[in-house]
Image (tube, rainbow, N blue to C red; front, top):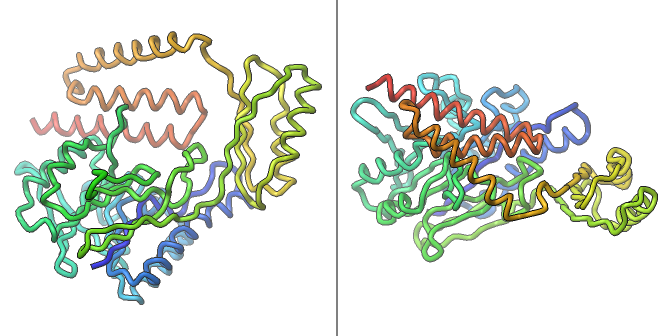
Length: 401
């Protein structure tokens, strides 16, 4: 069987702000990325398209978003390609309110299939779907319980590993804590119990282990946030017979990020130097241009003027960001910040109700601070939602006791 794996499509996303040409083109970019995925699936004659979370950008969608999505899924149905999906944190299927989800609506329309699981006083209950002889498990977005949920699944699976495929909206944790991620140790538990684990949540390509990998994150096919690095983003094709995979770049909208270091801090000389730098930039029509102006000391810069100049030259979006060093002494920064985090974690450890989740809460607080400093509203709200989820889940667990 040949499957195509995608994730984090975020259909329906629009940039924050007024609706205009930029907003409309970016809105269409996410559907264009999904269209590329569908064309690839049809041309490669895949049997199954796997979507491991965040089909939509928001739980509440407009009729236009729903209509476009239905039309695109119908192309797959017409080509006898089965679509199997699990929800992500943006799809956000609320326990007890599954029937209100648009994913469930699309399942009832026969446009996709949605394997489920649930948790009660007897523990975890997994309900895989069997397609072409393969068992597809859907774990959604377990958030801070991702490790626990995958561990429970590893204890539950008894069948042949070559017949099990898992969908879960998560990625491997890095050295720094990030909410909703999993550890390599937990993935290793499933090494001989699943042929493929379809991850998501992170927006760059990832796989594990380096030799004979079976856990994959394809990366969001389009930039969800312009601050995302321009790493690999795309789709994965996997052959269950050979256990070989190939990564296909999704070709997101071109984003160029540049660093500018002025040589002068005289106001008039700076204007002349920066204007010359911008005038000599090479980019294509409707590219997104981000320029970081790295300053050793403050200087007045007419940001709107320079951004408009790039727009007049054909850029779809122009962002000029001022970067000033917060501390001259790098050692001071690295010593000072962890001390605050340590104090916060020790304080949370002392809370009876949330002590078991102190690392989750502490890590999310650091993310909230960073996004507040960057004035990144979308990522701030996303992290805030994760913090609420952690606290609500722990509250539910304490009531059960």
